[in-house]
Length: 337
Image (tube, rainbow, N blue to C red; front, top):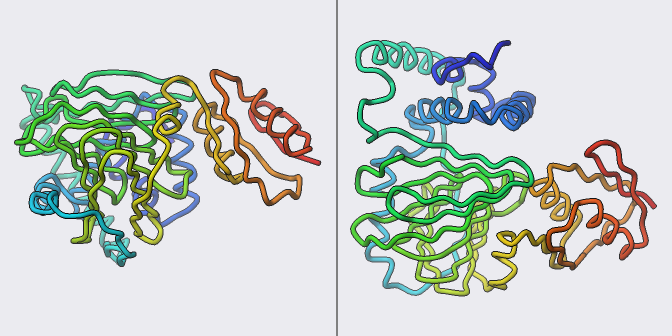
């Protein structure tokens, strides 16, 4: 398939892409994850296709987002609480029906493109996607004056000019936000089913797909969090962290080490009683290397900090501390006895 020539409408009409979007086919999900990782230049079209599919009510649209977060206005004066797990929102049960709906939507979209063009003459609905490859970080300003520091292997999508009642961005990976204060236009970060709303503050969001939880760490100001499909929220104060488990929908409040939470901005890799899976995920997100454990060692609980260090030196240090060895084949590292 010549996916390089695909536009948004082509991706949205592709059966394999739709199956991956719906998480209905593990093979399709693996294929498209790899394809997108190796073709970052197509991210704008991919995101546009996902927005098209989202319009079929698989995700909240802009109006629904505003309704969800209108509930926060009174909640901001309440005390934080621990949120128990909630049931997962339902999606369409008939995949074939969905494909028909997608096809119809694509036809309508193509017709609309011919009349009015997909990109409007003004920038009101123009979306921007920024992606960092492995080992790269970037700092940029949004149109409202907010500053974003985007970590390695991370993607953020936002409107070029924030229109409407909110300033909404979508994040996959990790970013540190310094949000320009505007009480009349809340700033919202969407990471999967978790929405984080602020008015003006400094906070870190870590939402890599290969990590088991999403973490929101607040350094200054206040934030309120909401799970899509739930009426329950959580408010954070400075030095507090929210930990969200997407599988169980549980949202927990805890404390955190502020220096460790933002150390990645200075090129520091930090492990704190980390399991092998956590170590492997961090090394992959930072350097794009795959770590495999064939040592038989199960209890890792590794703690260490490395500043501006290459991944080989990190692996050597971990193996030395654990009394293990490693084998390197291209960008795959196998831990052995």
